[in-house]
Amino acid sequence: MKYIIFILCMCLPIIAYCNPVDIRNNLGNVKDSNNGYKGYILIHSGKIVGNYNDVGVWTDPNDLGFVSNSSLETEINNRINADTELSGNINEVKKQNAKQDEEINNIKLINSEQGKKIKELSKTKYNLELIVRLLETRKTILEIYNTYDARHNNNVAVGLRFTYKIGKKLSG
Image 1: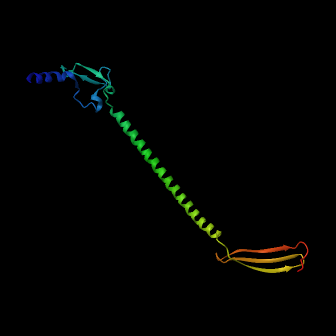
Image 2: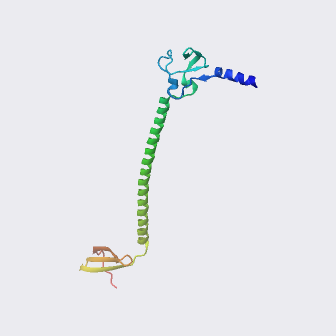
């Protein structure tokens, strides 16, 4: 058991050891002076030579699956903007739907009223008609008239009637 612990303690630093800074923020604080590897992270075994880590490999963070803060912020901002735009579009569609619903309800109301009127018109009419003869000659008749609808309680027609007689008078 002692040997297993000793082997694990000796091998762990060699297996993989990342720079002790949080590589998700500032990508390991890699500066321009990293021997031309700007933006890369030094992955090393932990062996310290002098004042800096000597043994390791400069690695592109994208190869490790890390996303830089600027890329992540850009993605977050893009999604927020898309969500805001989508929300605005949804609200616009809701306004249009409400307007269309109101128009549909108005059409239904008009159709209902017209249906009632058509039903009333299809009922039997009880008309009273007053005719006043103004002039009568051997071949013509001139009259004025007024037609009253007793069921609907209104005048249906008012007019002037001219009649021209054709042919001979039948005697009876």
